[in-house]
Length: 439
Image (cartoon, rainbow, N blue to C red; front, side):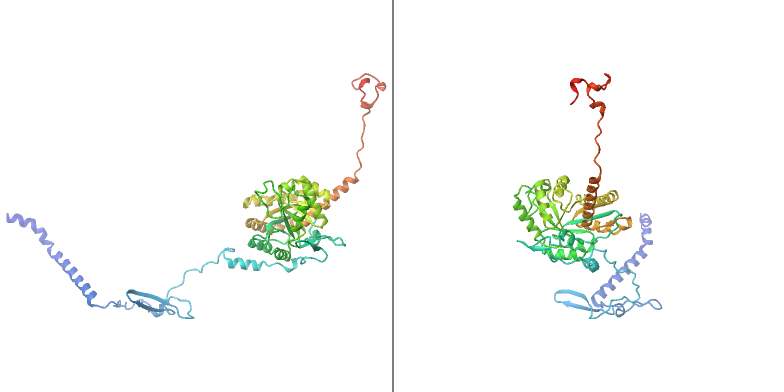
C-alpha cells in the first residue's frame, strides 16, 4: 500500500524544488516593491547608459519654455507650460522637423484672400467712364434728376454708353447682368471681376444706388436701370413698388416710370424686370417706349415675352432698343449657363452679333467671368450692349433703304386667260365660255 502511494507521489516530488524557488522569488519581489512604495523616493533617476546615446536634458528640449508645477488645494497638481515673452519657436534638440508647413487656403476660401483678390481687381482708371450726370443731360423731377435731350441733340443713350471701336467683321457678343444692387457682395464682384464691356443693370430699390452706379461706371461698365413690370401672375408675383401695369391709366404709368428714372443718373438704357403681361400689351409698351424716346433713353428687354409686340411698339416710336437672344440663367445650373453661353457664340457666328441677359446669381457672375477670359482667343469680341443696339439699328436702316431702292416687280398678265371669247380662234381647252369671261 505504501509503495503504491509513493509511486503516485514521486512525480510531484521531482518538481517541488523549482516550484518553491519561483514562489520565493515572487514573494521577495513583492516585498521590495512594497518597501519602495512605502519608504522609498518617487523621483528615482533611471540609470544612464554608458558609452551610448544619452537623452538630452530638459533644458535642451525646451529652451524657451519654463516647466512649473502649480499645486492647488484639494486638487491634484496641474502641469502648465508658460511661454516667456519674446520667445522664439520651440525646436526639439536632435529631432528633425519633417512636417510640411500648412498649405495656404484655396483662392476664395479665406475672407482675407478674397479681400486681397478684390483689391487686386480694382478698376483700371483708363477704362473709367465719365462721372454722371453730364452737363445738360438732366433736369429736376419730382423724385430726382430725369434725363432730357439738350438743344445739341445729345442723348443719354449715347452719352452714357461705353465707347466701342471693335472689328466690324468679327463675331460680336454682348452680355448684361441684371438685378444688381440688392446683394452687395455679388454687386461688388460683378463690378470688379467682370470685363468692362459687360453691362450692369441695377434694381431701383437699391440702397445708395447712385454710389453703386458711380462705382460701376468708374470700372468702365455701362449701366442700365430696371423698371418693374407686371407679370401674368401679379399680384401674387409682385415685382415691387411702382410696378408698371398693363391696364393702368397712362398718367399713372408715366408717374411710376419717372420715379424709376429719378432714382439715379448715368444709365444709358432702361431694362425690364419681369413684365410678361405688360410687354404683351401693345398700348402699354408703346407708351413706355415713347416716353423713353422723348427723354433720349434706350430700352433693352431680356427676351422673356412676346417679341412681336415689343418690336412693333419700338418701330412705332423709333426708340433705340434691343431684345436679348438668350436668358443665360433661366435654369441657374452651371451646365445650363455654359450651354447658353455657347449658344451666344453660335448666334454671333450666324448673325454677326448676339446679346445675352443674366441675373445676379453668384454662379452666373462666376461663369460669365471665366467664359469671357478666353473669348478673344476663340475668335470672338466682347462688346457693350449699346454697341450691339447701334449695330442692329444700322442694319435695320440699311435693309429698309435697300428695300426702298428695289424696283417694284412688274405684273405680267397671261393673255390666254384675258382674251375675249370672240377672239378665240378655236374651242380648245383654253377658250373661255361667253357667259363667264371674268370681266
